[in-house]
View 1 (cartoon, rainbow, N blue to C red):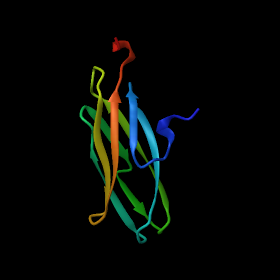
View 2 (view 1 turned 45 degrees about the vertical axis):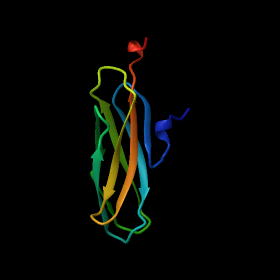
View 3 (view 1 turned 180 degrees about the vertical axis):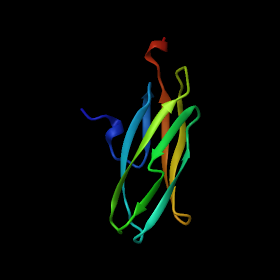
View 4 (view 1 turned 30 degrees about the vertical axis):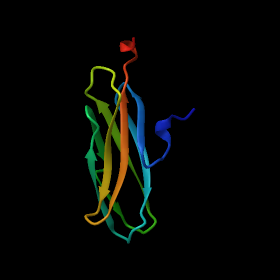
Length: 110
């Protein structure tokens, strides 16, 4: 059965982060050929996010490129939702994807 994390949505919600997870997203270029977008991460409080690759380079106008986000927590306790974002920018255009993460450790539930 697919996970909610497997859906290729622009937003990302992790309702129960217990350990490091990696999610994949695919985007399509709608700008001119040779567009380059750099990732800007604003992580939710207590969350570490790494994006690979950090720059998307499109060589055609309808090219699709995949990237991964690796998300981990520094929290040692259960939290409510914390919010951040991933923004792709070419210096003129900005494409922002909201990120929400809730840390949950079942052994701490009580």
